[in-house]
Image 1 (cartoon, helix red, strand yellow):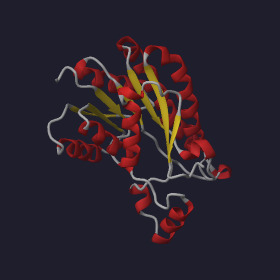
Image 2 (cartoon, rainbow, N blue to C red; image 1 turned 135 degrees about the vertical axis):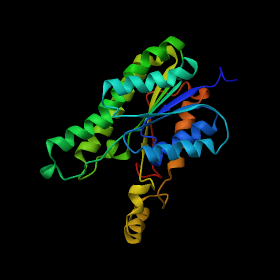
Image 3 (cartoon, helix red, strand yellow; image 1 turned 90 degrees about the vertical axis):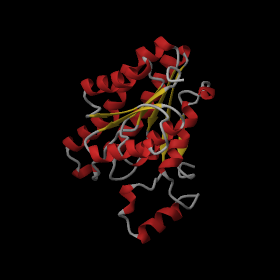
Length: 249
């Protein structure tokens, strides 16, 4: 059973959506690589939450900036160290540096594009050869509803998430014949640590603007990722799945 267990690599898995995805894959019986940028305590907590499910697979923590080629290499190598394969890649790592276009610095633009888009490119590129060789792979890139519709004050973030959609569709076309799929998920408003600081009034206004009348949960996104990673989803590729309570309608 150890040799047949699949491996999932999740970036940005220290907290929020990434944490929920990592726990979901581990609970489903995968070996899990938890990629994180800097908060080792948060990543360790993710590992602990996985381990609370029982001894279901192997877990590894890898720290580093996904926009650096050597970190992307380390993530892939760590994932392949379990069984010699990496079946699932989830590109979830991302940052925000919000500001109006008129006030946005070049540095803030460049940092967001590097972390969100370049990091996704690097990991997709580096996982391509092993996935093609094993003739199986699932690449799931986390975009955003703002990558589809845009958002004031988020020119850099919206551009990075829109870029992820174009990248995903191109990767899907290149790899489809080798039984490797590439899809994107576009979350809407998700209840995480970032939204906890909002006032009740602001939360009520947000909920009122969503057809489902509530924010999503990190587990809502994790469930969608597991669906796309399943062997039975092999005829789905190049798609953008909106998990947004109807915001994208």
